[in-house]
Image (cartoon, rainbow, N blue to C red):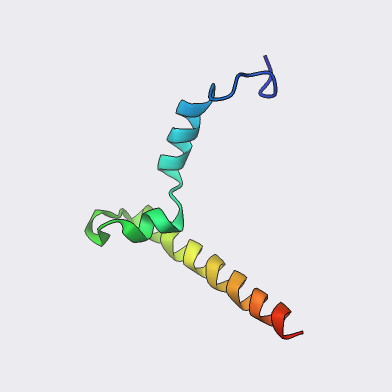
Length: 64
């Protein structure tokens, strides 16, 4: 059975596991900083950089 043929929700456990490994910026910002591992801190910094780049790009486009 391919992924397209799988019933909706069939991959829910896999998606939850992936989400736990790769939390969003909002999830990371809501956590207690003392509970963040080095890897999660690095992810948080990278997501903040990407978010800032997105904002700068949007502002530049708006000014055109």
